[in-house]
Length: 234
Ligand code: CA
View (cartoon, rainbow, N blue to C red):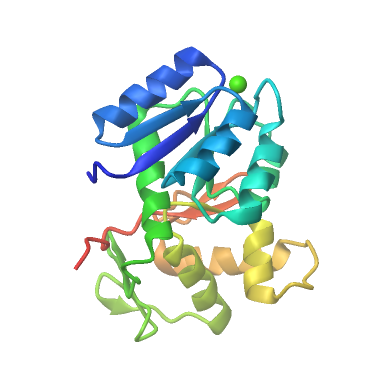
């Protein structure tokens, strides 16, 4: 783990905050804690951390406002820590520019995995050319998808959809984000076409489409593709 990476934790609950910072320190990250939204915003600007963990329920400003303000000037990965489990709340947070969310209570392993995923996507240092995990292999430059070594035949839309998810593997993409990316900004909000295409993809790549191991459904929110194993730096 790179000890120079720093993480800003904006969380007013001191017990949770110290649990998080202890876990992060134990994994080699530097941490800075802020207990209010205003403090968090000013520390984000002065320290330029590598990742921000943001609690939505803050005493002074709403977490969404903090998120919005950060997004005005920064592409820093922001992972929202939320006690709120409503799907609409998560969708709103993601569509406002959060990279991911994690719902309380959560364990250290889950938190570390989310941070690694965010860091990997924000680094941009290793443009991915291959997605590889379990028995699935996608070569983005060759535009090929193989399952157990055999070519999988996908339609143009199915391929675009699968590669969008694969290039963002490990993070959840909202239905809205996917629809706009694949079918354009003026598409309506009917997800039916997306569901049909996803069912077709699953039939082609999943052993049991009802229990997927590559593309997971986050009910009411979107899809998350299994983390790419093939991302060791060259
Ligand atoms: Ca709180």
